[in-house]
Length: 193
Image 1 (tube, rainbow, N blue to C red):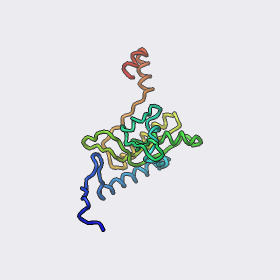
Image 2 (tube, rainbow, N blue to C red):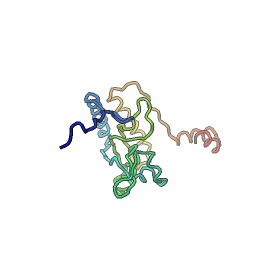
Image 3 (cartoon, helix red, strand yellow):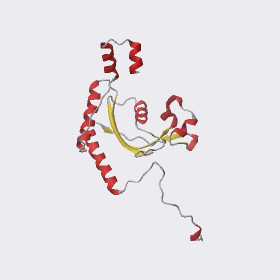
Image 4 (tube, rainbow, N blue to C red):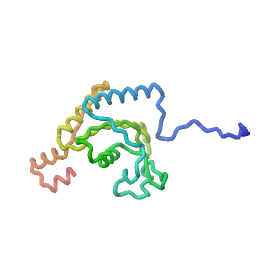
């Protein structure tokens, strides 16, 4: 029989950079997700869910070394495999598309879920947070960029946000304007990267 007094009390504290969402906040988050999801689906985007854990090599790419694990929430898992929590959705999306060569293109997907970053959290920033992401993969048509902007605008309007500005940048536009203005190629690279 175990003595009740031998148990150590554990303080009910939360890790730095993480937080709880009490019911009223979670209900608001769920409403935001539902409104956003409706707009995404109206434009033909389909849901995709990828694992929270990925091979560390996938997240880092060809420059991966075991020492990189400390840059993410990474660890050596079963079967001595280096793995890490996803820090955003772009890399898992790229892995999914590359692993499914018969996927009809353009592929239009959206994804909601938690992502994790090791960075030291500043005010209002967290190590775990919800990301809402949508992409069109497999087309070079500028219409896809236009559609992305239209979806962003409609989502913001459906959420009741009225005072916003959409800023758009396009390297081809900058290069074309600088060429038209007569900037030599080496100067364009100096100013515009």
